[in-house]
Image (cartoon, rainbow, N blue to C red; front, side):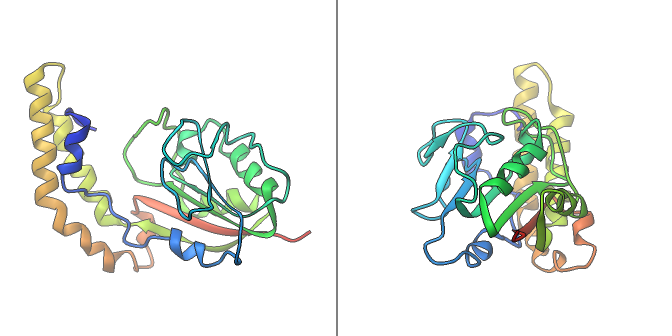
Length: 224
């Protein structure tokens, strides 16, 4: 992010917005009493009983650990989420393999990854994936794709890139340059904010995934 106190970002209009959110849709696929695991939960809690896994101790973290070596039994989960996670791990195949291992036959895996999102380390940022690429990665681990597509649309890609480009133009090592960078980012965010809602319509277009900021794939573990 451009220069500025972290708390200040809460007051800036957010350009990143999911015009086709998927988490609640996938939750409806889980059976009653399902065991749900959220990998890289980042402080959220999808349901009160969701097991939240992260590498940091956050408010809702239940398990602190390595997402490539999960401390769960084989076939012990009904639904596993991994949203905004695969770009931040060294080996995404190991994560998907662990999801397949802990899911029951017929269990659901839901994965969201960036496609045209800007660099954002947490603590690293090492990959981007297309919709077909994400689907193939899940199929390679024995999953059958149920649904796939963009969840953060092309207008957000454009607006966020534009705001960050202007912040980059003014950025520099000096305090005035960093302040100018922050000012440019804030101004662009305020001006561009209303236009992000165009994605309500544009994300439905057949080629929306080719310019999307974020994409998803929901897949079911094959029985047997």
